[in-house]
Amino acid sequence: MVLATRNRGKLREFQELLRPQGWEVLGLSDLAIGRDVDETGRSFGENARLKALGYSHVTSLPVLADDSGLEVFALGGRPGIESARYAGSGASDSDRVRKLLAELRATGGPREARFVCALAMAQSDVLVVEAEGECRGMITEEPRGVGGFGYDPIFLVPELGRTFAELDEDVKNRVSHRFRAVAALMAKLR
Image (cartoon, rainbow, N blue to C red; front, side):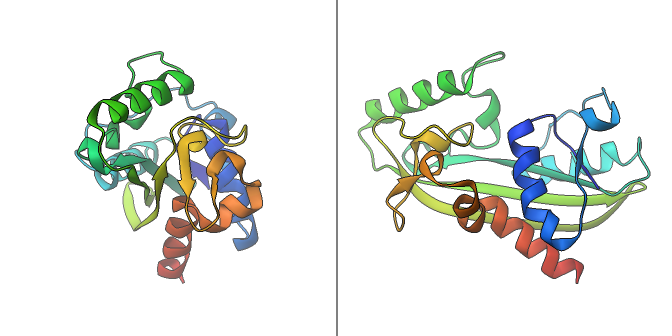
């Protein structure tokens, strides 16, 4: 299948999650798909649907699209669907993390948050299945760990006492929002 992403970290996670199910997962770059699908939806689910259906026009393979991000409750759910663009166009992961921590400090509010992953699979312009997963946690005061990508260094999984960036990839892939969304997707496909 084709994963509708150019993000190598996200591609690697999905390859690990779907390999045991017998799927070979390729990214958009692997198939030299250069066009982008605009994410104009108002929810993670809408954006995943738009991408899955949009890319299903350019390949005969099944297309799996995800839209995922971080919702911080004290920030009214921000960054939400704007997670990748939270600090503006061209901002780095570190820029987004700094902005989020500064806003959270300014609110003085609670640090509860959740990662959300919405998945949609389409083939030949037909939506096949959708699923969603979440992982609840807390935002740390400062980044911790060197693994993962995005907001992983500040997302603490309370029951493990570590951030996503401090977890081995195998452990992260057993508790993450993506793992839960893929498990729900596979159950529906069965």
